[in-house]
Image 1 (cartoon, rainbow, N blue to C red):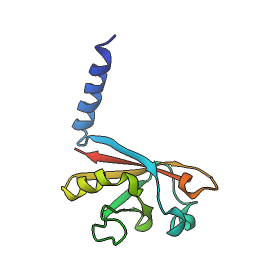
Image 2 (cartoon, rainbow, N blue to C red):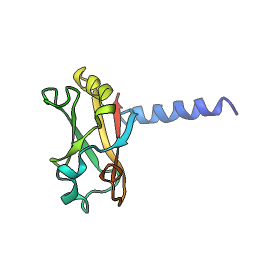
Image 3 (tube, one colour):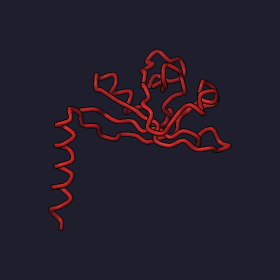
Image 4 (cartoon, helix red, strand yellow):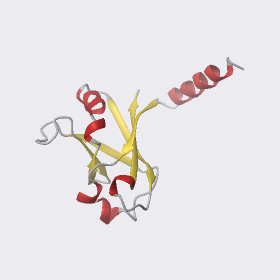
Length: 122
């Protein structure tokens, strides 16, 4: 049984590679700043699984590692400051990154409303 998991994982990676893309999950976190940007007004249009665009803001005066999160060209917020350093470094190094809405929740706390996942694309 011990050999099945590596075999299955290898097969999954190979099939994904044949499809042209391997995506590795590198971060799962809440969306920072949701209530300050377009998130509230777009809430009813967003769906779990929707693609997000990450935009590096190296010149951001509040955070040198800032990574803006956009949905359909609208600014939703940022990757949390405490968790953005690795993704910022990957983007600065020219690595391809991708993101999606993992979970949408009706919650009083804006930090709990949108969970996003960030992937490195190989």
